[in-house]
Length: 284
Image (tube, rainbow, N blue to C red; front, side, top):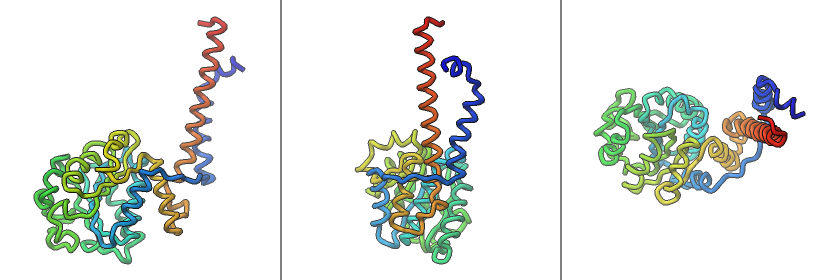
């Protein structure tokens, strides 16, 4: 047995990993999620927001982190639309524009197009370069950076932005981010400074930088794809039409991730067994 493990062709490991990930995807296997407190708090902030509130939604990520963050952005936008909130989209990442457009197309216009009108219920400010300095400016003067939306409509001509002079005039910042600038900068330069509530969804790596702001400056946090799955579970529990697994991308991703991690742990254990057996036998 030890000789078999010692000489195992790595292609068998690759095949095992492929099957471990592919089978749960093909059979649509899902597991129940037990939401953590940071995710519950984010959900409750949106759920308790008065209908008709204006929410600024920065989507600061690129295609490299889309697999992890798109489910969060989808869940946030879907929840905000269910609660009849007004949404202003913006990004400080140059490659995020098409990703943001896709969310708007599939969720806002696709699922809620019968009651969401551009300029009245939502607007897209698009991308603005300048990193955290953009946040620093719009904290007190939105038109100092955005005189028009992405479609070159003057903000004063859009009902949703006509009365918004600064970030201080919105009722919530819902950030989805993969790095800098991102949720941390929205907390530091806008949320804390203006006393505007902030919730965030972030990659697993970035989440560790955000826990120190919770729960005072950051009212809720979705850490990594697990946080997105927990938020989807809460959304499905509150709104039964979203219990459908086809509308819960993060939950569908959890089963292959679980089995993939278990396989990695097993391989590490087997590798250590081979190592200690060989050391005991005096092999170099």
